[in-house]
Amino acid sequence: MSASVGYNFGFMDEYAKKEIRRTVLKAVAIPGYQVPYSSREMPMGRGFGTGGLQLTLSLIGVGDNLKVIDQGSDDSVNAVNLRSFIEMTCPGIDTTTSVDEANLIQSRHRIPEKPLRDDQVIVMQVPYPDPLVIVEPSEDRRKIQHGEGNYSKLLVKLYEDIVQFDEITISHRYPTCINNHYVLDPSPIPRWDVPKMHQSRALILFGAGREKKIYAVPPYSKAEPLVFDDVPFRIEDFRDEHSVRRPCARCGCTSSFLDEFIDSENGEKVYQCSDSDWCDEQLAQQGEC
Amino acid sequence: MKKVLEVDGLSKIYGKGCSQCAQLTGPDCDTNICPQCGSVVAAHDLSFDLYEGEILGIIGESGSGKSTAVKTLYFDEEPTAGSATFYDGQTKHDLFELNKAQQRHLANHRFGMVYQNPHLGLNFGISAGGNIAERLLMSGERSYSTIRARATALLTRTEVLPERMDELPKNFSGGMQQRVQIAKALAIEPPLLFLDEVTTGLDLSVQASILDLILEIQQELKTSMVVVTHDLGVIRLLAGRTMVMKYGRIIESGLTDQILEDPQHAYTQRLVASSL
Image 1 (tube, each protein chain N blue to C red):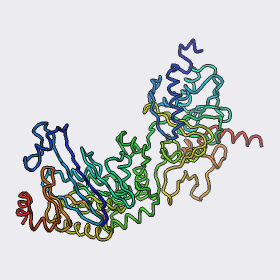
Image 2: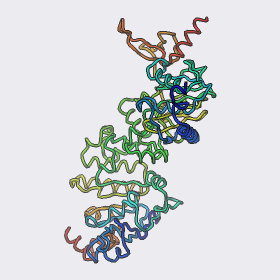
Image 3: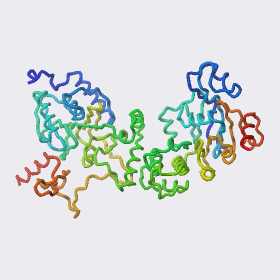
Image 4: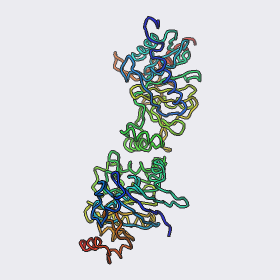
């Protein structure tokens, strides 16, 4: 198929892929550090996941099994398009929707519910790699603050949140400290997914195509969300007004991250697993019983 | 007495500088712009010591280099020549030999600075309490309730109503902004505090209460301070020892009373005479 398309395997030339692999090595060697790289032009707009795509294209090889997720679902438009592009430019690879079967996962905004294994790599698409960008506009000064591990400005933002709202209001992209030094932006995953990075068995890679940065959480490393000693980190609360945990409307699971949407017929709120593979698996298990 | 700071031959030249700069400028030549190369000699060959709990005053007209001297010591500017040693208990730091990270660490943990303009010392985008919190967080404090309690205590101490702690500094009067700035500088109880024209532009009663506050703090915490001002009244009230600067040089220094009662240099005589 490669011949008919007329592109090199993985769309990018071998030098480009090599550069990205080297960048990945550096990112793994310095956990949480944003390594700059020369983000290539992709046949799609920057900001549509080109960072993650370049990582995937330079890591994938014949025989690999790929899963692409967009906000937990394999059927969202971003996931479908990226998957078909990778299938077209990488002949000989397999794709799957199952977390178990995949050894390479590219994801937008979610880490799968099912714990990953140490033979898996997950690639996250990142819009804004630097967590300090909300408090410090100058990149020069941000770099100094990263170098010195000075995240006081971010902590002041958390302080102001608690003063104003009695809790920390960051819902996604929660700044997380990796291996006691660098604080990274874990891409727009919900708070729910942040603890999954801690001592993760799988390698987590982050690619920001527009901002030209790659960073990593290596397997089995510390990932601690930025908090005060006496104000603990909190994940999303899915209890209803009677303090009962809401179940997924489809599979009944009470331990997954839920999406809220409005039923188009009766206008009521419906809650359903955000991770479609997880939801399907729960349903299949119930069928077996 | 314990020495806190020792400054030796501190110089700061803006511009490329030449070998003639030192000879062709200064009070004798009545200029601080070198006629040879056009560089501005903001400060030349400043040497002084500061002891524990002492307040040293630096007085001089605009452009005499008094602020420049303090800014180099707080690492806001890099000096052209000279050395400064900070004695911190058993350790001593050669200020201008430290790298940038060490300098910032020292400034964050051991020094305090209060600027004339609160916009320089405070972040106007966050609340007064947040400003104090920032300084505490920089020095490694991670408990929300401790930070809250400490900020309340500091604002009470500097006579800002603690109820207004969560307001933005822009809603405050000039005097209150200055008090918040002092509270921020004091948050980590620094052994060395720099005050750059802290009362300039405030009305007289507010000036008096801020000067009182500074004196009380000096008594309580035994903080050493360098006070930069062009106001003889401030010097008279605060400083034990005083240096008079003109065109980047120290032209006279000694006990404050001595300088005010028996000025030796013609410029100092004019200065004292004009204020009386």
